Image (cartoon, rainbow, N blue to C red; front, top):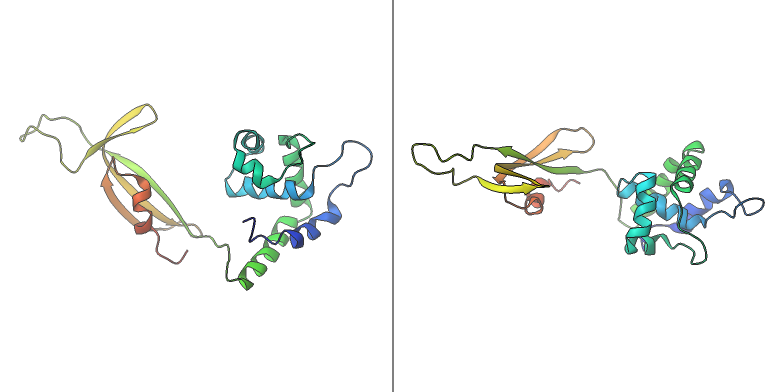
Length: 187
């Protein structure tokens, strides 16, 4: 995103409405605030979570390019920046500009598929005629809880919320191994 995002064009759209240095606290660098706002959206972080992520995750802090002589943006500053964009309808306008520029380069952000998995529990008892467990079922842990059964891996269209693909595996199968089967290549 650092190489693809048309930073100068987007900054020119926001700059006239961004607070200038003067009375009161000096505003954070506009480009840093924009980068933080975008990361917050990409990773679905709340304002407090974004502030914490900037302290905890070096790669996010590096992408944000914070000034070395200023503290990292706090959650209130992040909130105020988001409100500035919302109040002036800048989020939608900048997205249109970005999409147009990315389309010229053959790149474009679109909604796609949401991929997730759910565990389907099965009895782990061996008190059956064969005296054994179902060989297609396996044990897996989630948090501190253990489950026995299968997983349903589901692909959902992000626009319509309709399920387009379902695969099943043993519960101990890694979710990431099913991603290629769940995408329909129209994302």
